[in-house]
Image 1 (cartoon, rainbow, N blue to C red):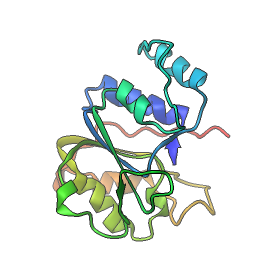
Image 2 (image 1 turned 90 degrees about the vertical axis):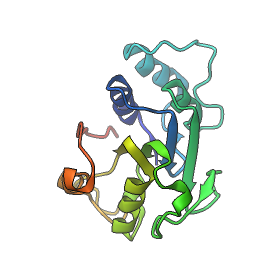
Image 3 (image 1 turned 90 degrees about the horizontal axis):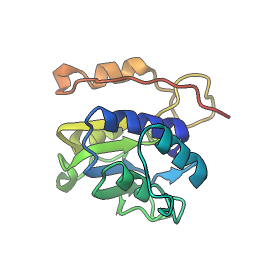
Length: 179
């Protein structure tokens, strides 16, 4: 799981459309999948000018990059402490009340398809985001046999993040992952 250049473009798109990044939670600690030069190029091409001296990542993870996009605080949730997540939580289990409605932005950079109890995992994301907040999820759709438990259809997101459940889909972006 991590932030590819395509996912970075999605995050910038969200920022440009008034997504509040101030209190961000990530499902899994998000790694940056590209070198600093490539990330800086995407930022620059998107009109986000960053002092060249600022290192996007000093440890391979995305916290500094998210701060450039407007995050004041990043909390990461993972099943284990292997990558240094700020909170250990198995998303097969319901999230505790302390984290419900706490985040202006919840990012899944490629974890949902790896959680066996998908209904509980997606409900956790829905409960963690504050009213008026945003959920961004990057998941494989089709032809990804052997990658996680599920290949998730975009239709699922239309059904889950519907008005009846208190959500509105602003954008659904689909991109072909580069090899």
